[in-house]
Length: 60
Image (tube, rainbow, N blue to C red; front, side, top):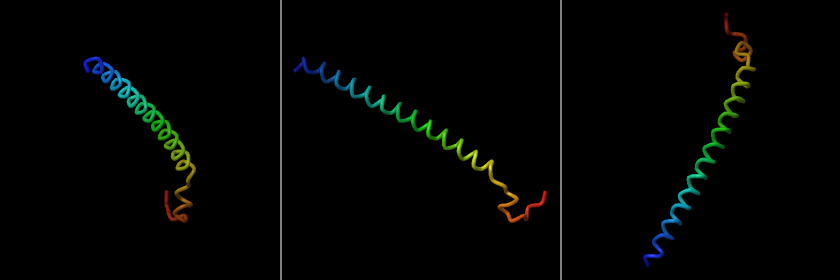
């Protein structure tokens, strides 16, 4: 039984490292998608004309 204690600890270390690796990869991918989405949203909003959207009712 005492020989298996070390093997169980090693299994938990490997499992924990794998879960941490997946979490880091997920966060990196999520951040990259969010950056891309915010850039596209900014481009879309900059291309809009508030004067035309309001039917010409905005006064300068």
